[in-house]
Image 1 (cartoon, rainbow, N blue to C red):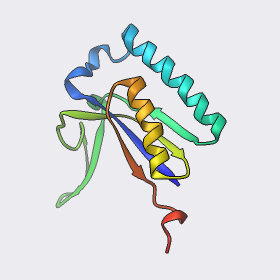
Image 2 (image 1 turned 135 degrees about the vertical axis):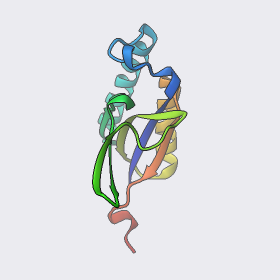
Image 3 (image 1 turned 30 degrees about the vertical axis):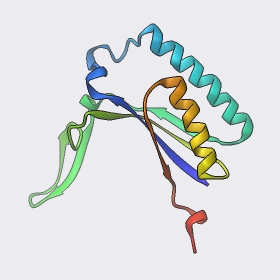
Image 4 (image 1 turned 180 degrees about the vertical axis):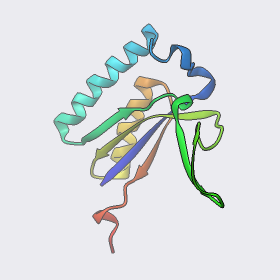
Length: 123
């Protein structure tokens, strides 16, 4: 089963002006995460992962009475922002929770697990 893992960070802790210069603590957490990601590659459970740009550079596209309009900024204001995503392919939801628990322990920020609907969900 494939799972989409959504990594969140507090909006007030993500300063757009300093987003390009991570702290020593953040660099250490990323290094630990990269080692864990290598473990998941070896087990065949890792599919992909990416960090996302700061919400200040987000564009939202929506349909309105005037047509389809693109506007700057995220769709809604949040206390937490989506900062990264990963896709894993593992045998069960329980295994996904084990993997994500370790990621949260390494990175210190909450993550959400969403099953990806594919052939596994077909009747």
